[in-house]
Amino acid sequence: MIKMKEDGKFQATLLVIYRNIVLFLQHVKDDMSFKRFFFLILTSTFSMGTFAQTTWTGTWATAAEFTGQGDMPQTTTLSNTSLRQVVRVSIGAKSLRLQLSNEFSAQPVEIKSIYIADAKDSCDIDSKTASYLKFSGKRNVTIEPGKTVWSDAIKYNLRPLQRLAVTVCYGEQVPINATSHRGSRTTSYISKGEAKPNKAFQTFERLDHWYNITKIEVPADGRKAIAVLGNSITDGRGSTTNMQNRWPDIMAEALSQYGVLNLGIGGNCVIEGGLSQPALQRFDRDILGQSGVETLIIFQGTNDIGTSLHAEQTAEKLIEAYRTLSDKARKAGIKHVVGATITPFQGSGWYSPFHEAARQVVNEWIRKAKEFDAVIDFDQLVRNPDNHERLQEMYSDDWLHLNPQGYRAMGQYAAQIISSIDK
Image 1 (cartoon, rainbow, N blue to C red):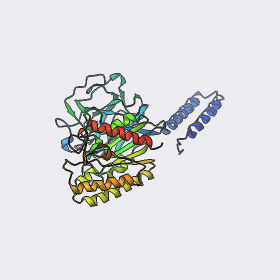
Image 2 (image 1 turned 90 degrees about the vertical axis):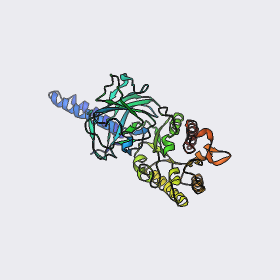
Image 3 (image 1 turned 135 degrees about the vertical axis):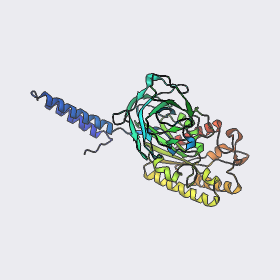
């Protein structure tokens, strides 16, 4: 079996072989069926070589989770429905591929078809841009429990920062508990039956979750991605639904040369407990499983501290966890690991003098740690200058999460830090 290389040597070799065989076949005059067969084999081999050399990088991603019944559709199941979901990508390209996940489900999910299109207002799409995805050459696919699948690569004029609609038409068999991302901050729409791109989408239920979609990748063309490991502040709690104004969204607007991948989960912890798998457990899938990541931002810890009964011990465990994650990232080839300080939470249910002391200990370590190539000091950015234990009033509505104004300040500041790393 020939090993495909990404430096172009394999493709150059194929071109030479192709040229020489063409010269040879010019002298074969009597057996036209032999010529046709030989050209078919050669063309297929060349195409496979070209595809195998594609280097991908992420333009959009989300962290997959188990879906409890409270986050499943409330008036129907997904069986024999069409689900239109909207995402905003970061970098553009002329082709893409999509990953679907059934990792947290106990039953298979049957999909009749999936198509993508430029999103318009609400559930509307630009039907002229609609393109069906295929899986090993077929429109339909069944994803077994605990598995993921990639679509075949498809040509598509994907613009930077555009909103893309992904319409998943489900078959009869769907899991009791889907694999989803609960905190989409974006409305998804459900219609009965198999919705067609050129027909009006008849919505009968709306919900703010993503189901089954987990990654969109594009040819790298020398571009890299930034992955963000975070909790609800990264996931966008307090942002505006459908406005794409989480802080990583704002960072993506300023860093047009990078794919920005938001792997935040609301209520998530680093060490243990919290909602969904803690960061130490999900790191290999959600961070190391992304393509083209050059920079990792670690911005987590407030939930570990806020829910801790032994804040001092939790601070020590968090620091050790950051060391572990940083080391794993570097060994996996991630070039830059960036630490972000934990933002203030006085006024919220997380606060006590003991929890605040733990936050200060962790933040001081982050600022001085050799494990990080740079520090995004969100704490210093958003805290009240007259009370460092509390957020600035203009940046928060609940004293724990940020609001759109606060997220804009965070995203712009983070972009400045990332831009300065290689300077």
